Image 1 (cartoon, rainbow, N blue to C red):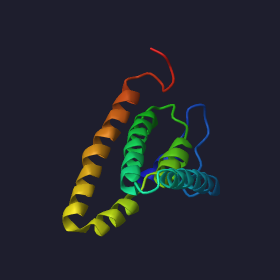
Image 2: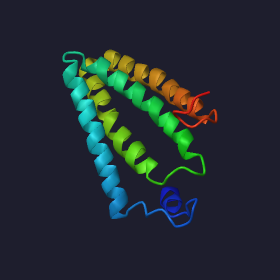
Image 3: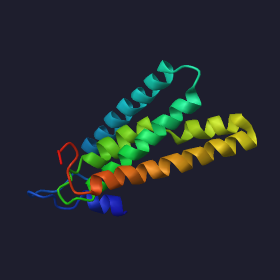
Length: 144
């Protein structure tokens, strides 16, 4: 419910952001998700035979970027479309929980537990690092 309420809140400069279920927002989520999924698929094909390692790197990078995005979204001037396009869509399609679970199941109980632990131990700090870097106050891309 909070996400729906935030989507309809007034934006800086006037007007309201579209509803979270509007065709525009749903289209942006679909577009971003399609691009993210294609990028993930292309990377896993480019590094054939190392899918577990590639998925780990993809999830670490995606977690870091999502952490930075969450810091950017906390700013009052954040455009409404950032969350659906990049957070839910692109990064949701790029990172993958289901591949991790499938790989963990195929690895057996011990190997699967290690794979899941490695994901948590690497992706959570990556998200915190991304958040911290963006939250320092300078917009992304601005020099020091």
